[in-house]
Image (cartoon, rainbow, N blue to C red):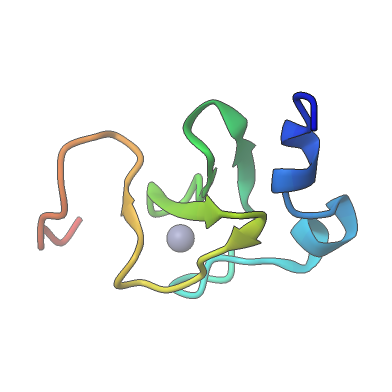
Length: 72
Ligand SMILES: [Zn+2]
């Protein structure tokens, strides 16, 4: 009914066990952009309807540089 945006975010216990599928790093909550950011590779995994989309194909660059194929 109201502004229950909290309901559209994964539970803390779920976030704790989630890791980046690319490098197994812990993720940072980025509610401002509705995503989970990996501090290691800079990928941002979108959260849709409270479900984190942990797919490399769905991840975007947290830096906003677009999906490039650059190797660091
Ligand atoms: Zn990563």
